[in-house]
Image 1: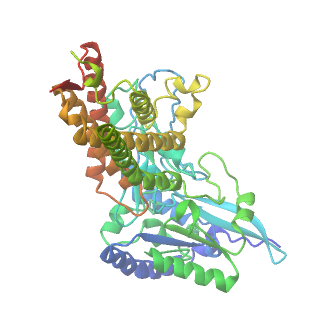
Image 2: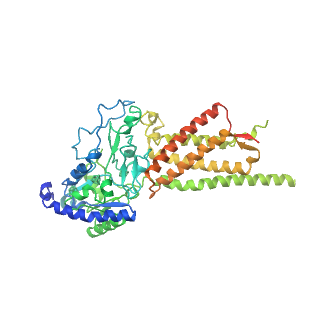
Image 3: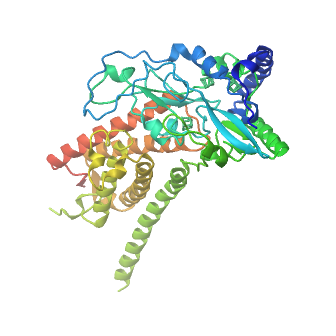
Amino acid sequence: MQTKISRRSFLKGGVAAACSVAATSVPAVAKTTEKGQQLATLIDVRKCVGCEACVEACQESNVAKFPQPQKPFPKMIPNRVPVEDWSDKKDVTHRLTPYNWLFIQHATVDINGEETELNIPRRCMHCSNPPCVKLCPWGAAKQMSNGTARIDSDICLGGSKCRQVCPWKIPQRQTGTGLYLDLLPSMAGNGVMYKCDRCYNRVAAGHAPACIDACPEGVQTIGPRNEIIAKANAIANEINGYIYGEQENGGTNTIYVSPVPFEELDNAIETGQGRPHLKAVSDQMADGNNLAAAMLIAPLAGVAAAVGKLYKNVKKTEGKEIN
Amino acid sequence: MNRLPLTIAGTNPIRVIYLMTLFGLVLSGFAQMPIFKRYYIADIPGLGWLAQFYVTHLIHYLAAIIFIGISAYLLVDYLMVRRKQIRLSGSGYLRAGLLAGLLMTGIMLVIRNLNGVILPSGLIIFLDLAHLGLVMVFLFTAVTCLMLKKRWTTTR
Ligand code: SF4
Ligand code: SF4
Ligand code: SF4
């Protein structure tokens, strides 16, 4: 049997559920801001019916942030630099694009012998130590004190390094917009990178992100990271389930809970450009940060070598004097 | 004139390692910007790693470790021993100052990269631009000094 809930069937009565979720989210957002802790979201995969109300809400809520590229695009030098243009495909919702920061992945899996369709909302994971932010050469990608990773579209030059270093290749490029047009449009830069900014302006005003508010099933919960982790573990224990995001890339601020292992989900979902995987991910910044410890020892080694040399010279001179 | 102790680094292996380290730092540093792939440099056989951001990140850190170690050695050696015979020239002070600036901004960026560290975004932009600006001025100064045969130090 295949369990599949249509979009229409559950939209009825959804508003009430959405309101109740919104009511619980607001204090959680406020609480985190007070504590200065990182804010995390819990995504309970069991609950998502794939209605895409969140996807629609995300687009509606963030439409003012979407790119408005100028055409024709400047000629690129060299001409192998790829143009990425989504401005005529704004209604694409089956993958991440500069105009679609959240989409639903579908997986058909076996749960206790029953073929079940699971729906997985996917967007930026908001890593605790985000490589997109830390490795951006200009500081255009930023991490806010509540852990939100966002790309400043006024500064981003669209070189797409953030996408290359992101373990899930989340940020998406739109050519023909942004600061590069005012610098050397043919020689450097290629637009602006876009991704979920966790509705930072709504959160700053004390509201929950639009996708959380819009969900009729209460799939997502937002709150201080330690509380979200505790909640995720409690659910996982209760259902004998699995967690994704607690350890991935050294820990993220998006925690998924699923009744089936994530390797199984990863095999069942469609992945590729704009469609992130669900594989295990090691901490991408760890090697560098381990080397940072060696940087503390380096000056001591240098000083020791210089003192050692001086000591040897003094000894030599003393030796000569005695002779 | 006794020309032997005229440079801080001297003509010893330390000078060679120091120059190689600086070259490695500059190359891996510029590789932090997405330019080597775009301009075919990473297509040259053997240079593909220049377009791998995590690899160049590690190389930059490794070169920085060697740079910091040698700098500390040269500084202490200068203060304790060589200061009696030589002193930094004007261009030596300029180059040392620029390297110190690069070191300070670099250290701040290493701290920024640590888990759990969230620096203000304005400070990060300043550090990124200052680090890049300083290396440009340093390269210009170093090449000028080389052409004009300006030494780091002079005899007392
Ligand atoms: S998932 Fe990717 S884009 Fe999102 S914060 Fe992590 S590294 Fe950045
Ligand atoms: S948090 Fe905001 S920006 Fe991110 S997916 Fe949800 S609605 Fe979109
Ligand atoms: S998260 Fe909620 S709103 Fe989004 S598709 Fe799933 S059920 Fe619908």
